[in-house]
Image: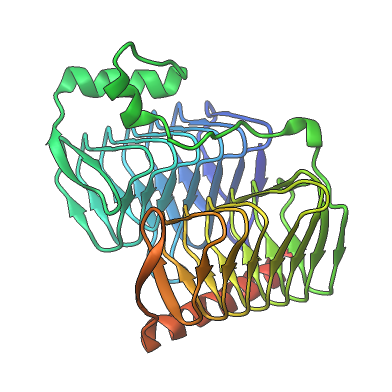
Length: 347
């Protein structure tokens, strides 16, 4: 396990934690007894604190992060987060289950014993009552969940097992063909890095990477399959995102672009100052024009062109609305925070 300080902050981790060798815990994290961190799982408490209670389980490629200088992440006791799940600057009550590739976003509060189905998104600022199943983008209440079913869901995720009931499996397993980390690719950076660029120690780069000044590639990111990946100045590719391209293919990301946590990208073009939301999926041939936004949890069909200055959402992603001025300003500020992070981590 990678245990790293951030500035003057060092993690506090119970002695009996069970963690993969490439899991990462950073900064002002506090992790309770008998917790499990799977392969490439990342708990990144740099710009705020993360508190995780006892008996929690985080699957492969899962991520816990914060909102810089604003919101911590608080995870209760006995919580289960499936592979590629994301817990971001939110409050999860005791005994919650978060399915594969599900997102719980900033300033949301999820009550004890709630279940967030695979591929679902809990939007910022939502309060969800405990003891219910929630599904969809955005996540909406489906039905109450009893104690026996809740225990079964926890056990299935933690053991990596399937149920004879297809409906139960659909609650927990992503519709995407999520694959486990590619340890055979090895860690390392076959890359051209400009000054002040940063690549996290648990990132895997198996392609020709060019990273501009102030650019950053974060923990658990995988860039796989050969080909060329060009990332412009001041852009960031956040924790546990994955680029999969073949030799001869290319991903071009312009300057001042933010690619959120747990994003999946095929060969595509993302122009300057665009924003790719957490947990989104970009199909092959996608073009995101300058200042365009792909919303959290959205999926672009192959060949989609997201217009400049517009937010596209849904599956398949379609035009939702122009990017409001305040949103554009907040995205730019977030990008500056990541340039600062890159500088601080490189010290």
